[in-house]
Image 1 (tube, rainbow, N blue to C red):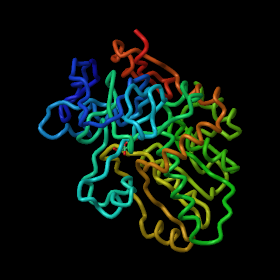
Image 2: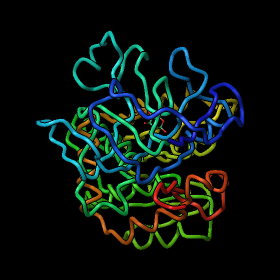
Image 3: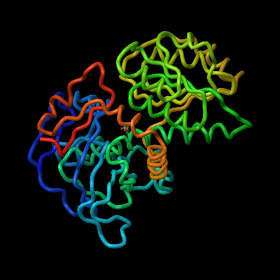
Length: 349
Ligand code: BGC
């Protein structure tokens, strides 16, 4: 079968190679790939800024935003042939640490977790893949067109879950949320904010293309320019750009008792000068919380599936701006200014 691979540590090594069928040891669920979403992490893998091959191997099959149909499932696994499924990205460390031992592998304490298509286990960019049923989530068959968005939605479902857990430290009735960055993660974070009945603001640098209208059609408000120009101090900020100057602006704009969730993985070497004394003073005097959030556990994947089911299907499908075949993988890896989510379509020639 064909798979999109890289040689981790070697820049621009992406290639479609003929690889062996997935081995039964990789899991009892055999899945025929339908689609695969690409994200910023895949570009980091391709430019060799990130990523690890399976032990003893030179190549890694990339891809962590899966969608497929079950071809083989063992009796009693909860899955049957034909089910629409997605595969979980992170697998617990072998120790396991206290978090992984409790199924919260998104919070792994010793960094010995593995991640499909990213860290030491092959990903989902192959025509077929296997997984253990414990690391798969069945989707409503109605989600066929947008189910590939489950993984990025699981990441924001976790961010929202942790924001709300932090919020419960005191009486808290948040009204406003600002999301910085209107890529897939930002737009899905905004969707979950609207689903919670909050007043949602989204800030991005572009003034045209599909983003402003997508935000407006969600019932949220679109902004460009400096964060301070939004003229409100949000109860919650979800920072999805990873850009140092935007991060600083969000810290300065956060409301009293505010919660700032950092959800964008930054590139290295972005130096800014900060008055930490002043930042600390404000954070202390205003009970503010700044925290980072990555990945998602099984519960967040279920929450993601529910959020996608509740969302307007037409709005969601507009997030997928381009579909390319596996043969056209080079086109899929081009970056167009109007792209939101680019998907590899395994059914397309
Ligand atoms: C993925 C996460 C993963 C993170 C760090 C993100 O792109 O969506 O599942 O944990 O990269 O590797």
